[in-house]
Image (cartoon, rainbow over all chains, first blue to last red):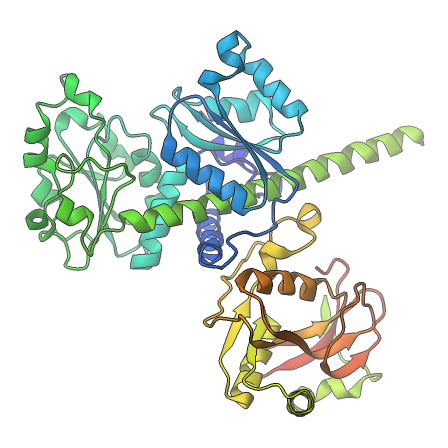
Length: 339
Length: 177
């Protein structure tokens, strides 16, 4: 997964795939957030649609289930006026024995312009962008434990819209850091955007070894971890982890790491609470907090559509410019041959 | 790229006089067409500066449009690197809109702006107010009020500087978009 930044950018430094925030500079992340801010406005219009991707074809390739991410990507593409095809791969050709490569080549032959890829294997979207269809814009909608960049960036959008600059903020990320596909992207994005105090909070069994090397602090005690925080990002606890040895029980987890009203009072009085959903009420967060005034959980859903519209339109823009540049290079070569 | 004055159009040097002329034309337009309580909408960036002046003159609310998502050259030029949110802090349904831009040239910006406006609602009417018109229209769109009409040589464009002091000038630019 080396050199993601070059793979994601055109020769002129424009976004052409969006695989991870890792390696993208601050200017690019801020451009994504600025563009998303404008798309938030589109969501409030009477007609919630712009003609930007009219005549372009976006294929949602979901190799694993995800109702929420899939539906927001679908809605984002539709609000950009793209033609959208959503393939649940489990029920499509691959289950009839067609290889992934053949499926992708077929979709490319249909003149698809963008693949939104969700896969359980880390690096799947990266592999497709690099090896299979470099001329189709690839948006990573979550790959294994590696990355979920649009979720991380919609969290950045939420923070910036409600808290402003990142430099003075203390941000606590709470939960199963080890198995989270979004925590690493959040750390990369927060650091790039200038956040200096990033705290990871969770049981030692769910904290990756050596994560402090990313410039974060780790806390196994929830109260001290969120003390004075401006932003608390709760991660969704995968309940299947309960069956493994990682966690004792839901009740025990809630007692130690559940975000309750009493515990929230340790953070700054105007702290915001975020969660990617779907929330496990009474396991990682108390209903009074999830539905309370400091909760951003439902705002995040709307911002998620705007953020996805932003990266889709930016990647499509970069991809088209790349194609034009390649076309003009090849036509000038043809011209040279004629002479 | 570089600014240069042109002796052919000495009016450009006195931009405040052009703005004043435009405000008079708008007053006249509203009277002759019986338009009451119009809403002013400016197109980023120069149009917004001008719209503020006009809204202040008419004592009406104003909004701003960024047409980046509605341009007809996305395939050719991609997404503009700096997009600003559009903001219409009022309901435009059945209202008279004064759509303001600094320069009317091809007409494509105005077309995009009208497409965007209709995604916010259905106005009673739209009048186009521009400080300058360049005789290079590519679409059947023309201004209802315009302080100066002029011809430019290929590669020449008009640029409005602001926002505190508005100043029009002719610039030379090989690949202006």
